[in-house]
Amino acid sequence: MPPRISVVIPTYNRAELLRRTLDSLTDQTLPPDDYEVIVADDGSNDHTADVVKTFHDRLHLHYHHQPDLGRRVAHARNAGARHATAPVLAFLDCGTLAGPDLTRAHADAHTAHPTLNLGYVHGYRPWDPTPGLAEAIATGTPKQVHHDFQDHPGFRDIRHEPLAAVDFQPDRLAFPWLFAWGMNLSVRSTDFDAVGGFDERFVTWGTEDIELGYRLRRHGLATHFDLSAWAVEPPHERDTGEMLASAKRTMRQFLDKTHEPDVELVWASLERDDPLIAEAEHRTLTTWTDQARDLDVRTEIDQHTADAGGPVCVVGCGDDIPDTLPEGSVLIDFDAELLAKAGGTHARHHAIGLQIPLPDNAVQRVVVTSRLDGMWRTWGDTITAEARRVGREAPRTLPERST
Image (cartoon, rainbow, N blue to C red; front, side, top):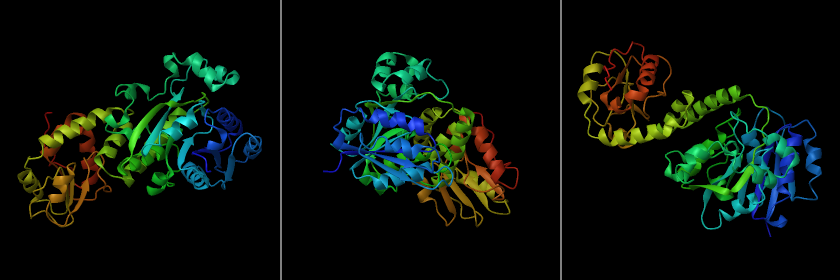
């Protein structure tokens, strides 16, 4: 009989952290024959392979080593998944310590219906390490550490507060995929394969996991946050400044790949170092989309494009486009239904305009219509800067905004 669940652990030159993770997986309430562990090595040149050998008599363990061609954690995870034999894949980071019910909880989560199951990670607070946690982990088991620290606010997963606000039901949020972190999650292998696994073009820290969560949601999976599938993240040295900078770069990579308003909002919020404002801004956009559905901006477009002398970009185009719009123009709107109805053969993008998917000086003029008024209070400066970047002319067509 194949195991119920395969645990995939990517690693690179972290042999002693890997030892801790593998040791935690020897103490599971799920019977040993019901789970397997795949160590997906991204080219280590330390004693990782020797550490793995010491666990062959305690775990159903497979080891895959790929050449060191730079950071390829997405590639390593995919390679590990290809070696898996169970119908459920769980991904756990190297160094993260599995609680005793982790494999059972993840396996059980997929018995009724397919889901993206996200596990709780105690102590994962890179910008605010839990005092005393590193010392406790050095001498105690994950179960003992959990018992001793469970009431300590600093032991909470960094995702705790926004998820607690919705009773740990991420599908009540606009962006449940923002909480899909590869350090502790699981999915059926058939669903993982159906969306193509992790995108291996992400080769620096961050975003490859939430981007997978985004595609799994579009694939139709519900997102479940499982408090019983808990793990503990030991504090260790991190360059948090570089982590944030890398997250911004990879989020931009995600946006360039999937230029949709929801991804655009998350990217723009992260650029402001506050990704959680994306949730409130999504509610604003949703409300404004309904309010602006019948807003006619044809006259605005016609007025500001008649003398353009070249292609224009209309941000907030609506569905009624003048026939006089210059050839080579570009249409942008956040309302996918109206954008689809817009006439002509002009290129079009489903977007807000926080990041216009065009190169610098791509068009003669940018027209930002009053269909953007509902987003202007928070994003007016951002939209204006983008208009100035994309238009060859200073976009005098930008209307004065009082909101």
